[in-house]
Image (cartoon, rainbow over all chains, first blue to last red; front, side, top):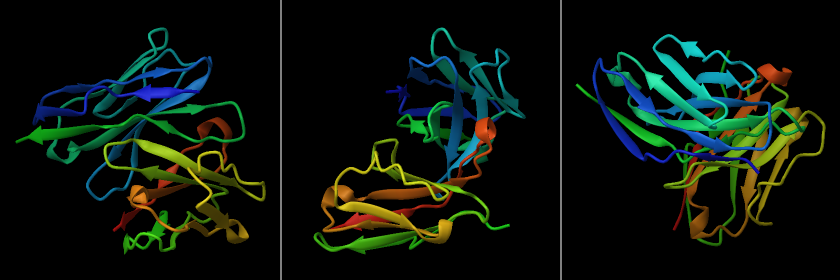
Length: 116
Length: 115
């Protein structure tokens, strides 16, 4: 079974600075998808970014980018030019590409606070 | 169009009572998932529906939990004889099965508190 680990329960960043959130995972599969989701106090899970394991190029979405290290099974999220609205819980998630069930396996999340 | 909706937003119940949680997926989405988010824990998968296929119930924690999806649309998660450890946020997600490009869209969740 796949597992996702987020070892940092909390992080803080100064507004306009850059922060990196860590995530590691364990799998025996060679092809899969990785995601970062944001959960603000409203509880609505919002997809931030997605990475396909077969792609060597790191995914980017505006101020958000990932550092995907497949051999190390590491998938960190970098937030540049942090904004107050980035304050939320962030979850790293894994999805297999095999099998009929596309369920997501989540880490325990990290709470990010942004200091004005 | 409208996103995934869930009701009620919050539910307080007494231990031993049954509860029903409802999920309205995005129109046209054939896949529907239920997840549970407990305090201090990540999200854990509960059950998955895909079209008219038999649901994948592998994540249900006990036989007190059940779910159905009527007409391939609305889904109801039922917890019988609730226990305090059932207190959590229950999240529903839906998606179109577009193969590798599938993206799950989540609802706002139902926060359940069992006293």
